[in-house]
Each structure stands twice: as structure tokens, then as C-alpha cells.
Amino acid sequence: MAGYSELLSFMDSPVFRLYATYAAVVTLKMMFLSAWTAKFRLSQKVFINPEDAPAGKKELVRRHDDVERVRRCHRNDLENIVPFLVLGLLYVLTGPSVYAAAWHFRAFVASRFAYMVCYLLPLPQPTRFLACLVGYGVNVSLAAQVIMNGQLWVLGGFSFGLGIKIMSRGGQVRCRRGNGANRHVQFPIFEGYDELPFCVI
Amino acid sequence: MAGYSELLSFMDSPVFRLYATYAAVVTLKMMFLSAWTAKFRLSQKVFINPEDAPAGKKELVRRHDDVERVRRCHRNDLENIVPFLVLGLLYVLTGPSVYAAAWHFRAFVASRFAYMVCYLLPLPQPTRFLACLVGYGVNVSLAAQVIMNGQLWVLGGFSFGLGIKIMSRGGQVRCRRGNGANRHVQFPIFEGYDELPFCVI
Amino acid sequence: MAGYSELLSFMDSPVFRLYATYAAVVTLKMMFLSAWTAKFRLSQKVFINPEDAPAGKKELVRRHDDVERVRRCHRNDLENIVPFLVLGLLYVLTGPSVYAAAWHFRAFVASRFAYMVCYLLPLPQPTRFLACLVGYGVNVSLAAQVIMNGQLWVLGGFSFGLGIKIMSRGGQVRCRRGNGANRHVQFPIFEGYDELPFCVI
Image (cartoon, rainbow over all chains, first blue to last red; front, side, top):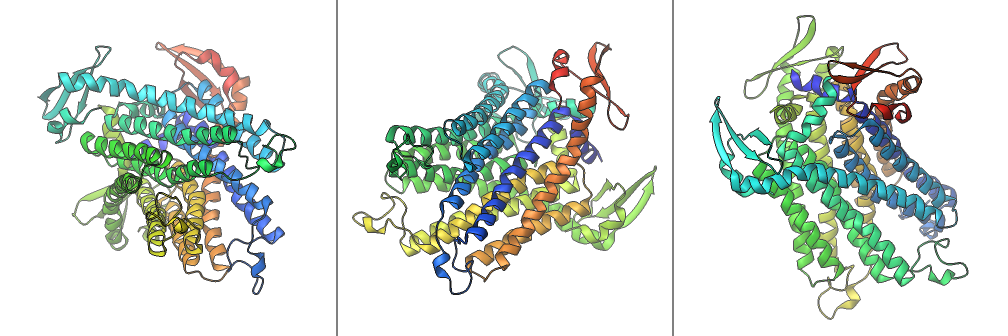
């Protein structure tokens, strides 16, 4: 069966392997902050729910700056690492060079570790700001490359709406179009070719 | 090497390209709110950490409704865009028509931009609620299609546990089963066929 | 066209189908908490923005513990389910057995449903803590397997930097290297082979 072995062959791609490794490492780093929050809650006796506090100690349901600091760092991770995980995967699928991909991933992962250290110690600004900025810049770069790669098709789609030509060859309905570079691309449309003039952006 | 070139051929799929483009655009929109929060913090002089405020101005560590508004919008983005990014990818892999996929993605991205505008201006309700509802509905539709597509196998799995038949043919252990539609599906099992009777739901 | 049909063949993989189904189910569970928050806000008349409250009822812009409880549960979902969605996909691509994958996914999804029930009722501790711990452990296990699978290449990369050998054969630049197991792996490098000595970790 084709699907399963092809699936496994993903891991043969060096770029994908780099992505998978760095993605797992930076996700573990993000998950570490969950454990760190729990550790502070127990050691500082700061509980967020009445049922978490020891019986009869409702005064321990309170806020504490050490805990809130870890939670702010965690939220910033969610806001930055989650985009990286998705954009990184899409970026890998654009077929970048190993070199470019490796440096994008390394810069991002290093910036998130630096951010965490800056936030938790804490170090004086603008160290934390700069650490965040590097990761943010990597994400913007990844997104730009994904969009530029995808948009070739999107832009081609405009001419597609005008110059559509449905053909049937070898029992399969095909649709031929010319994109901006006057290259001809064909793709099969399964029982949906009548919808196409309305669908492409 | 097979894996690498197959990986690149992903981008040949029109549905995947649409997904990649819209996913990157809506992720950038989400990331914009990080920058917007930082901009408000600096312009309104509202800092969340003591080390962020200028030296000797600890009274600037405070809350401000403009900043909290952007953060609430950002959190709602996390709660809605992240499911879209994952469900959208899984949905692409179910092989939908370009037409259906394009309108799902467009509706979602438009609803999230509308949501952001409604929240930040702000516009009177129920505009923001309706904008959110459209995106939420798209996510539910994507999830339903992924589950229905996957569940054919899952339901087939029940009969699998009862009618399992291990075979060895051509040097490879195979497992043949009939699903509900009485279609026979084969898949290779690498050194794990003895575990199968217990494993399928 | 190769890309499109290969894309569709993903769904032929039993492990991937399990992942897709469980991922969609647990994402829907997370999205349910958005609806649940909205339901509590309307029934308890607790609004977070001035424009949400009925005209002239600004005193309804307030906090309420029932709503905050749902939101805390939702945030914990974001912190745990999002890593699962990414790590689970990468784990599927390492080619695990159906058995191992199914039990990882089942344990995670069950733990998140249990967590939600424990949080919303609420049940006394340590039920919620234990529910969270199971899901956390699954994520750590997934990440460890992804990293170990990817790192074979990463470790191989060290020797790569020392023993690199650029070849041109059949019009395509190739790069041959031996990894720790003395296996030879080849991959094509598109116009980037001069960058390779610097790029591999």
C-alpha cells in the first residue's frame, strides 16, 4: 500500500528531519513552563482554584508575581511558538535549502530559549525584547516564503478564471491553464470541474 | 531519493497551496496583534513587568483597557486560528474539491479579519459575535469532515478486531480485513502484527 | 499529477487516520469551551467588554468565577492540546506501530476529557492533576520519539561536516556521507552544495 511507505519516507528528507527535531525541542521547552508553573504554585502555596488549596485554607487562593511571570512567559510562547510550528511545516514543504532552513530553525529555537531565560531571571531590558524580536522575524520570514510560494499559484489563478479550458483525455477530466510565466500546468479535477470558474483566487 | 522530491510535490496540489497561503496570511494577522500590543504598551506607557518600565517609574507597571482589549482579541485568535490551522491541514488531506476548500478558507480568514476590526475599533455588537460565529462554523465543518473521513476506517476497525486474518505473502506480513462496505483493504505491518487484535478503534 | 494523488493517499495510512480522527475530536472538545464560555457570559450576565453589555448596564462588565473557571480550563487546553496536535503529527511521520500510536492518542484524548470534567464540576484534587499528568506524559513521550528519530540524522550530521564529499552524477549534484551506523545516505542538493559544510547540526 502506497500511502504508508510514502508517509515513512518523509523522514528521509533532511529539511523535514531538522524541522521535526527543532519543533519537538521547542515544544518541550514550552511544555516545561507548565511544569514550572505547577512547581511555583506548590512551593509558594499559591492556588488558583478553591479545590486546589488544602482544606480550610481558602486564603491560599491568590495571585503571586512569580507565578504570573511564568504564566506570561508561557502565553508569549503560545503566541510565538505555535505560529512557528505551523509556518515551519509549510515552509519545509516549499522545498527550501538545508542551509536556509537550518538557520531559520536554529535562530528561532535559540531566541525562544533566550527569551525564557531573560523573562524568568529576569534580565534588564532590552534583552528580552531583542530575543523576542529574533523569533518574530523568523516567523515573518517563514510566512513570507510560504505566501510567495503559494501565491504563484494564486496569481496564476486570476488568469485561470479567464482562460479556463476543460478537456477530457484518457478518461480523466483535466483543466489546462497558462500562468504568468506562460507555463502550462495541468491538474485533474474529480467531478468538480464545473465549479472551477467561480472558485479560484 | 524519493522522500525529498515527494515532499516538494506537495506544493503541486492546488488545495494544499490554497491552504498554505491562507494559513500563512491568517497566522501573520494573529502575529500582528503581538506587535500591536507592544506598540500600545510603549505609546500608552503601560508595562506588565517591573524591568520593562523606565528606571524609577514603577507606577507605570499597570493595566490599561486599550492594551487588555488587544490581548483579549489575541487570545480569541489563539483559541480559533490554531484549531483552523490543524483542522485545515487534516481537511486538505481528505482530498476535498478545490471549490469547497477555497470557500472554507476564505470564509474563515475573512471572519477573523472582520473579528479583529470589530474588536479593536470597537463596533457595536452583535457584529463581533457574528464574525466569530462564521469562523467557528468553518472549524466545526472542517472537523466534521475530517472525523467522517477518518471514522470510516475507525468503524471498519470494529469488524477488524473480529475478522482479522494475518497472512504472509511475498516476504511481507499483511493483514486483510473487510470493512462495512465489504471492500478489502490491505496494509503492511512491520513486526507488529501480533499486537493488532487489541489495538484498533 | 503526482502531488495530488499522493496527498490523498495519506488517508490510506491507518496510523494517520487514527491521528486525524483523534486530533479532530480533541480540537472540537477544546472549541466546545469557547461556546461554553459564551453560554456562561450570557446566562450569568458577565461581560468582558463595554460594547457587549446591554445599553446602560455598564455594571455588567465584571468578572465571575464560573466564567473564569471555564477560561482557565480553556487555557490549559491550549497549553496541552496544541503541543499534542503538532507532536502527534510528527510522531505519525516517524512510522510508529498502529498499536503504540493508538494507545498514545487514546490516553491523551481520554485525559483531556477527564481534565475538563474534573475542572468544570469541579472534582476534588488530585483528580484534575492526575488527568493533566497523563496527557503531559503522552506529549513528552511523543516528543522524545520524534527527537530520537530525527536526531539520528542530526548526530550523523556531525560526521557529515568532517567527511563531506560532493559528487556530480547523472547531471545532479549529490552529497554522500556516512553516518554513525556506517550507512551511506545520499540526497540531492539543489544549487546549495557549497553551503553544506557550514549548515548541518
